[in-house]
Length: 324
Image (tube, rainbow, N blue to C red; front, side):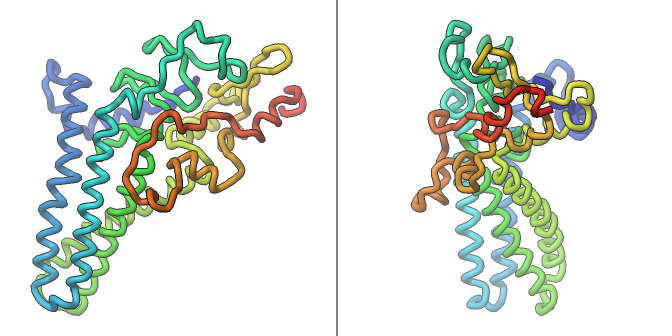
């Protein structure tokens, strides 16, 4: 599989990372992950725990009846976001259940899914990588349906916690929007605490813009049944892989003589598309039962669908000369 070329982004990331201040003897992968984890707890727990009470005092300083309902909603959303945060952290502690794909030995080559796909072999894990799996070096393991590594949360986002990640982002989006609207109203209509109104207005405006953009991007991914990593990888391939113009993973195997069939880059955005919005959503976040829709529950590997789209399989089951 051709990996995403992130050389320039990695250089920027290393320059901005606080871990570059560490002495060389302490600047290890383990220490960098620990620092990222500490910063994540500060950003997601400590700072909101300080700012939200300030916002409550600033808002309830007058017109208690006007703002009491809003404050209750803000507190509930904040506690809900905290619950999602702890669930997200737990998903990365129990790695065997929620992150690492099952081990597939060489001896298993005569069993499914080898009859349909030519899987890539991971020399680090000594196992075949399933479709949509990615070897994450920082954890030293192949992550099933890897989406991205979120430094803001200090965790890996994959199929198991993707729903909780969206709920967490949505809760903060609504919360920041409420605080933005209240701050804007008070700035225009209330003469007191002018500086705090400007502070909360500027702070939440940036967060709302970033969070809404993030949600919109992931809604697009869900509609295509695509992960962040796949989107970035295939985007790089379309721009740079002029020689082969093929996607290297997954690779289909011909039913007739076992020949390998490479999927064209022009079809990369719909490799796993189920041609149904509901099915794409289920593939992304798991079960859509009404009573568990907003519960921060985790998914497991057992409920994951890794099959290539039927449309893609039908198209590429034809001779290559008909699809080039």
